[in-house]
Each structure stands twice: as structure tokens, then as C-alpha cells.
Image (tube, rainbow, N blue to C red; front, side, top):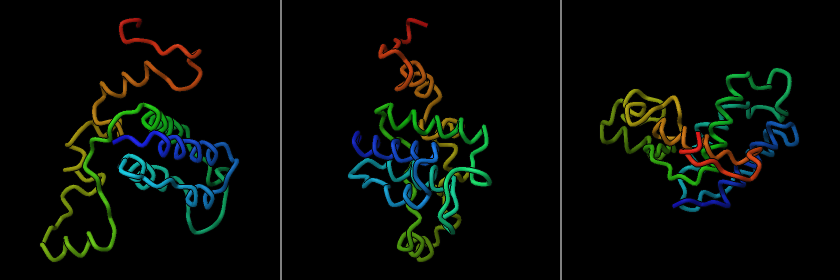
Length: 157
């Protein structure tokens, strides 16, 4: 299920953080409820959460500013949130209960832990959260911003 409102809210607060309008604490406090859409929790937890320090309140400037490569990666995450595409990667929830279950069931190593080799083999990790490069390329043909309001069809390129 795609929670369009939740995805838009996550994209908005992420853009606000990146544009220095809100702090990292405000970004974290504004994380929307996934409400059945694992893309929201996964993109936040494995994407945006890794871009800032939660040890101190700060803005995305100075030592907390993103590199050019990080900005490109974030642009892909934002594109996914607007692409209205299902999240197809395995969902990794690293909470305490899941860790206990893995220990009790001798599930070492954590086979589908986010970013593990087994996880990466499930799709094209270079275009995460898109599963396939073709899906990413298709989304690039219909950018949500600065497209003049006219999405392009794949045949027009």
C-alpha cells in the first residue's frame, strides 16, 4: 500500500531540513506514521536518519552539510517518495524484539539486514529505494519538480 500523504510529509520535512529551515530534531520529530507503507519507515530509518547526528540539535550546515554525492543520493530518495511506487525491498526492522528472536533462533548473521550482501542481491542497491534501475529511470522521466507540469512519456525521449 502506498501512503501518498505520509510520503509527501516525509519528503517535505526532509527538504525542509536540507534547506536549513528545520533542525535535525525537528526532522526526527516530524517523521510521519507509515500507516501500512513500509517505504516511509525504511527510507527514514535507512536513509535520512543516517544523514545527521542525533547527539545535538543542529541544521544541515557546516560540518553537518551534505556532500555533493549525498545530495544526489537524497534526490533519488525524494524521487522515490514522489514516484508512487511500492517499496519492494525486504523490510528490516532492527528493534530489540527482532534482535532477541534472531538470537533465540540462531539467525546469525542477520541474513536480510539492511545493506548486507544478501539484502543487496535482492535488487539494484545502487538505486535504492527503487528495486530496479529501470524503475528509477522511469521515475526520472516524470520528475515531480521543474518539469513544467507535463510529465514526459518514455517514448518521448
